[in-house]
Image (cartoon, rainbow, N blue to C red; front, top):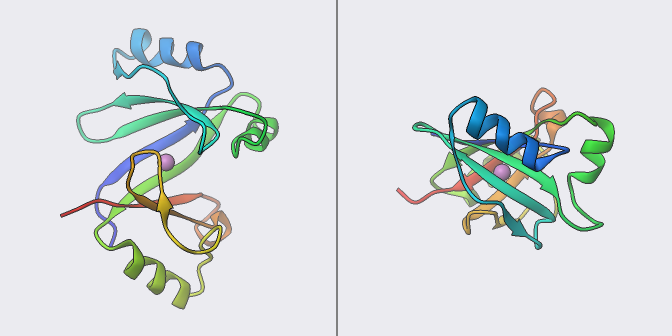
Amino acid sequence: MISRLNHVAIAVPNLDAAVARYRDGLGAEVSAPQDLPEHGVTVVFVNLSNSKVELLHPLGENSPIKGFLEKNPSGGIHHMCFEVSDIRAAAEKLIQLGARVLGDGKPRIGAHGLPVLFLHPKDFDGTLIELEEVAG
Ligand code: CO
């Protein structure tokens, strides 16, 4: 069902410092920061030849990663995102198997303008999993 690893998202306490480490230290191609107010994050994409890393920094008071950074003040891996071709079929199958889909269980439009959903970390070995529907 899942295919490519679309991205690994890392919550970072200091976005400028993280950008400098990836761009200047690791020599990666790094995007300009993008504010995504509807997701409560500012994101920087680290573009790799086979995948992406997303550096997430809280935006606004209700940011979903604020609590994560309070528990992990030096930052940490927040979630991994796998690609699927049919997100509704994936959700149906996972719910049948007893996995919990976060929120109302329905896909919503994610940071890349594509349908996404999140699976409860307790059902996946302590890892928050994002599924993103990617055409073809
Ligand atoms: Co993501």
